[in-house]
Structures are given as C-alpha cells and as structure tokens.
Length: 434
Image (cartoon, rainbow, N blue to C red; front, side, top):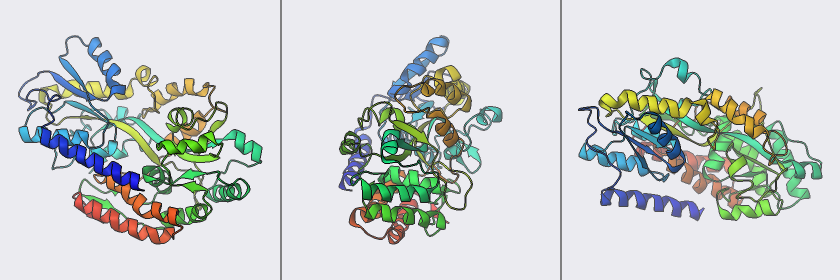
C-alpha cells in the first residue's frame, strides 16, 4: 500500500511544482474570445498524429498542436494558471483521465463548454450506452469520449483446460473456482484488488455508489448498500486464501504471476488484452481469452465496470473558434477510419465494430475476444461518475479494503472506513454528500 502513498505524494508535489514554476511553454495567446485566431490543441503523444492529420487536411485552419504529459492533475493545474492570467486556454484538450472533466466543468474552473447544442444528439447517441455518463453533469454533456475501458473476465484458457475448470458465469461460480484453485494450485490468483483495479472492476461492476454524481456539486456515496456488501462478501474468502492479490497490475512485481503461470483469471479492463498480458505479464500467445463479467446475484445480465479511457473537451473560452474546436473533437472521436486504428477500445460504436475486425483475428488470443468486449461496452454499469476526488477514491480504497485484504481483516468492516474517507474526500472537493 505504501507505493500508492508515494505515487500520490509525488503527483501532488509535481502539481505544486507546476503552479510555482508558472508552467511556461504550452500556453497560447489570449483566448478570451475576442477574435478568430489560432486554434490551440492539447493532446497526448498517442493522439498527436491524428491531430496533425486533421491539420494537414484543413490547410486554411490556423492550428497549433501541443503535446502534454498524461500525468494526473497536469491539465487542471495548467487550466487554473490560464484562469489566473485570463489567457493561454487550449481550445481543445484531451484528458487521459476522464474524471478530470468533473474538475474542468465545475463553476470554479468554468473551462469546459457544454456540447449539447454543438454536437447533434444523433451523433452523441452513436457512442456506447453509458459512455458519455462520465461527461454529463446536470443534464449537460461536457465532453466526448475517445475510448472506454469496460471490464471483462480475462482468463488463461490453457490453465483452465489443464486444471479442468469451467469459465464462471456468475460471481458465486467465480468465488468457488478461485477457492478451488487456491487449494489445488497454491499461488494461483483470480483477481487483483488494488486502487482503481479493485474499486472500478469489482465495486464498479456491482453498482456500488462510491462516486454516483448527482450534479457538479452533489454526489451519492453509500457503501452500506447490498451492491457494496456483496462485493466484500465475494472477496473475503478469496482474500483469506490468497486467491486475490493487492499487487497492482501495473506494478512490475505483478509480472511474477504471469511468468509463473499463476494468473488463472483476472477481471480487468479491455486494454489489458493488448497492453498487459504479453508485454507486462509475459503470458505466451494462444492462452489468454475473454469472457463477459460474471453476473451478480438477482440479476439477469452481466455488467461491466470501468478502468480507464480518455475524453476530449472544448473550451468555453474558444469564442469564434468554437465551431472549429467542436469539428475537430467530433472527428477525433467519431471518424471510423481513424478510430479503427487507435490502440484502445473506441467509445463510438461504429468505430468499435471496425476496430474489432483486426482484434478478432489477432493470433495472440486463444479465442476471439470481441464478443466479450462488445458485450461489455454495451453493459457499462450506470452510476460510475467522473468525480473531483478520483485520486483519493483510489488511495482510500487501498488504505481500507486493500489493507484488510493484506492483513486478513474483515472487508465489511473496512467498507465503513472507506465510506468515511470517501465522504471526507468528496466534501473537501466541493461536493455535498447525499
């Protein structure tokens, strides 16, 4: 758990350093809306080529593209500085962490422009169901999602066959299989319970209200609900038998599970397929497959949690550049040809279908992962909102549930501590908790 504290402190220190240094170098001229000048666009490295492609296709458009780091807090810090100087706002910004839309749309920042009158409903309806929920506050849509990260049940088909196990369709089956594996094959894991990988995967898919946004200033948090306690009950025996780990999947130490043939199952986001199992976990090709998330008791369909994805925002300060900014964002998020080539699961449904054609034929997988990924994209659990306490949401999970998993503590009791920390984080972020 100490790694999370260190990362959090480092991020906070970096954000403060940005404030003190003035963050020179990426701001444009005055974007106060006084005239149609240069379109200033901030994107990460991955989106840079696409933005340059758009610029080349629009030679009459004055456009400056700036690469920004994916660090948490970077964009809000920069926008805060632009607010102070009343200049330098980007007309378009890409967020690697869509939860920051809650900060940039808030009255305190006043940065993000509502897109409802700028992007037709027919276009917005083309995104995966629920994909724009993290962009929506008080009935207004403040961003368009570039990609989403619905969770599926990743599993090692080779180990499943070797051990004679069946892929679970319910969480009860998942628990039984995990306990059986822990007994018969010590060291094998069926999940990771760490930060957003625990909170977003298990509690997010269950519909536990840890971050249900009612508005830009009100959030619903209630960990006493059955949708929360059933997750604690699911994980309790798995934690006791060491069938789940608190080592984070992005921690280099997690690779020991992959190298040692110890990952039987791993509920996690869509991007784990391409970016974690082979390069990070070192699992050979032909073994990994995807199944829908297991179904929770009393429900007839599996719901997916969310861990990742990105979003585009248009500045409320763009003035005469608003249409140009909107056109760029719309193209970046909905152009099927462009999105079909991007590395992660497109939020726009037509693009996701095209994107999946290559994925279905990828020889790395034991079987076609697209049926499970497509189903997950259409079954995002409602109530998972973008919140201004995203970092605390993750660290507080580790400080309570994570510690209980490590120490053999009671997970239901740990929910009380998580509730207290979430409420405190929400209030310090300007929310009332209802």
